[in-house]
Length: 339
Image (cartoon, rainbow, N blue to C red; front, side):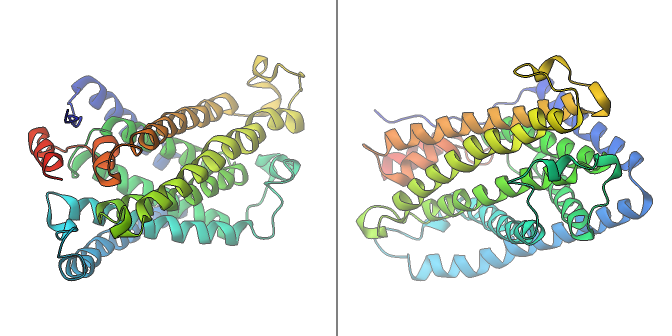
């Protein structure tokens, strides 16, 4: 039987709460930020908008032409001309550009640091006494600008797909982490969080783009299947293992070890001791992100299981693309039936 694609379902209360949280955290961050940093952040938001919208337009022109010429015949049938595939492809293209650029910038910032290997260099001296290098501060403001612009676009302008609320929670959580860790000068551990996320985002961007181009099975040189396996391994290593056992361990347990009164095996009993301001708040946000990663990894494993019996493109639409407000569920079902 044909699988029915899940669609976006409007939940006014949840949408209102998330929007109120998003606007409140933004107002609080701007009020607490120094004037010079606020102006730099504004420039970063504008720059992010230019890069993102420019990438969308360029991708639409270049890949629209490539899709109609190189992939215009059977069995591809000009994949980017069907439904809202081009809009989805352009969205993934700008995310790929951002994630690659930020991964390179983060690698540059971390190149001479031992923050990943030696947690004492993250916490000592106390963050209140640390003088951060300009490149690290700029990295943070660029990231915050990107997340603010994408959150505004996600909430007010983009078509809403089935993962709208999960992504909205991810966006507001990330803005809180980036914004408030900047204000409290927890930039070193924050750089580790950003690096792990951006590095692991690159394979999934490529996967979604390859899938939208229907480059699967023998006629597509099994690119969708190969990239999917690479993405599964990358996600498990960076988002589940490294994020939990290196980044969260550094942020929660080793933060106490170096700055607080350390209680072996029971660090959660003293979440606010010895001046580790906002310690519990930040770590709750980190654990929220990790739980979202576990959920998305479950979806990836479910996709892997379905790939045993279905084409990669059909499974991708069913599992992580779904239907949007502009593409009703019954239209999606008709498309899968035709494949």
